Each structure stands twice: as structure tokens, then as C-alpha cells.
Amino acid sequence: MSGARETAQALVLSVQSWSNSSQIVRLLTEAHGSISVIARGSRRMTSDFRYGPLDVMQWGSACLEKQSDGFRLVGFEAVGSFARLAAHHERLLAAFDVIEILRDGTRAVSQPGLLRLALETLAAFEHGEVTTLEAVLLRFELQFLILSGRAPHLDACVHCGREAPAPKPARLDPLQGGLICRTCLRGSADRLVPLSPAARAALHGLARSADPREAAAMLADARVRASLIPLLRMLVGLSLDHPLPVLALSRT
Ligand SMILES: [Zn+2]
Image (tube, rainbow, N blue to C red):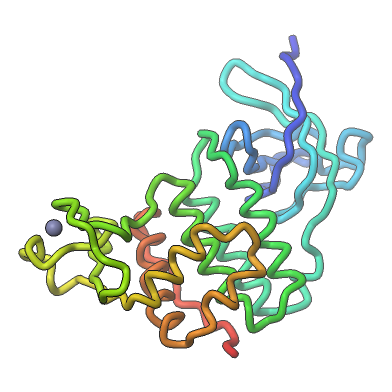
């Protein structure tokens, strides 16, 4: 007996072939988070899968059928696939980094705003200047942390709550996910990351930014960018429980 059906906007995070005609697909959806679903018949051109087999970075409208233990994918209406990314190595590198973070860092739990963030980031990689890839990726990483409930604490000491005035340099402990005041330094001094007032202001700007195209201007200062790249990679890597690679992306 088939269960109730619903339609959800979805981004394909991974695909595996299964049997001659089907696929096992990981989808990022707004309502259910990331879910693995069986798509019977998706490798054949049928009316339910008229764009043929699903592929990573395709996005569109997924028809999901409720099962006792999850969902089955019974149809997919592709809207786009960020096809122009494939023509450029660095754009593709940045896009797969985002896909990998989403694949490893999401579960079947709704994270409102994450699908929108993923789609607008991939679109910015596809259409923006190559020299903005790094800044757009930094914005994604910070907003991913925020939407995952792991936003770094940037205004006060994570230990004692003492306020850290914005015009002063501060230090952040990546393992504790926030600023540490002088009094609370204790044994963590060797892993502290210095944060200049400009770097902290840039983080606040990126956190609030509603458009990935704003990121490059917020990170125009090369020193700020250079300090935030390893910091955000580390914070996201800690949230995924494995380190992320250093990406060699073009700079201005
Ligand atoms: Zn403190």
C-alpha cells in the first residue's frame, strides 16, 4: 500500500546506482533536512523521472512518498543543475566543498534556511567572478555554522560572559566555539586564534548578509580574509568531526 505523497524542493547531495533501474539518493530538503531515499526506476526515462537519472547538484521538485521508516522518491522534476560549474575547475572545487559539508554535516532534521543558503551559494559560484569564490565560501561556512546551532560566540567570553568590546582585539578558542577573555585563558592559550576588530566586524557582516554577492566586499581586506579562512575551515571541520582540505582558490 502506498503512503501519503508530498512535494518538496530538494537539492541532490549524492547518488548511488542501485539495481539496473534505480538509485539511492541523498536529498537536502527544507522540511525534513537531509534524507536518503530509494528512487525506483529513476535510471529509466519514465514520466516520473523524465530528466533521466538524478545527479549531484541537481535541484528541483521531489515527490516523496511516506513510508513507515522514511520516504521513497517517486518522482523528480528537475529545475536546474548548476551545469556551468562543470566548465571551471575552481568553481567546481568550491561547489563540491559545499556539497561535502552538507553531506557530512546534515541529518534528517529540518534546518530552516539551509536549502536556500545552499542554492544561493551554488548560484553565486556559478555566476559570480572567480575571485569572489573564496569570500562566498566563507559566508556559506559561517552561515552553515549558525544554522547548525554552532555559531561562534563573538561578543562575549564563552566562559564567564564578560563582554568583549568591539574596537579591541580578541582571541577565539575554536574548541570552545567563542571568544575567551584574559581571565579565563587557563590552559587554552596555545590554540587561541587572534581576531582583529576588523575580522570580527567582517564575521558579523557575513553572519547577517542576505546575499552571497555581498561577501567579497565585506572581505575586501586581504589580512582579514587570510585570518578568517583557516578559522572558519577549522570551526566547520570541528562541527563535522573531520578536518577540511585547504582549497587553492583565486584571489584578487
Ligand atoms: Zn572569561
